[in-house]
Image (tube, rainbow, N blue to C red):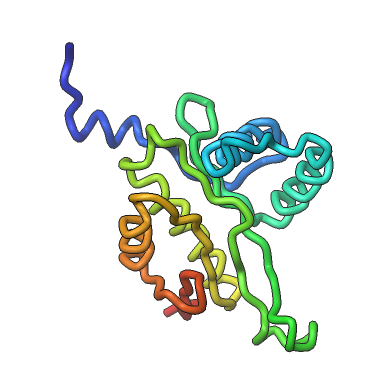
Length: 171
């Protein structure tokens, strides 16, 4: 049995990049896995698959989906969408914010900085758009405190049930 060094782990860590339309089948599989972890007693709603795939393709086309790949397989994803506060006019961009529609990392890759790098890409997109980033994470179970602490170490604060990060201005 060989022991992996930290150099080996850095080389084996997943690559993070923008998703491409050809990633759609892999992305759908991540949604099924995430759904199974959260709702083991309820099957993934297969009639919604075509709508889900179209929405994901739209987000990919806008550059709002980032994936982590290892060995050609998607092992992490953050899919983002721009929303607005309901009490603001659509033309008032101060009421817009970026939020995650899907955020998942394969449990095998959760201690390799994968989620941190996905959140980093989301933060760069938020900064580029000049709008806040709000991350919603299911945080039930024993790891709720760990998830909360992790997101706060990435520059987020807890506001109204979500993790909030104001956009940073370019220097």
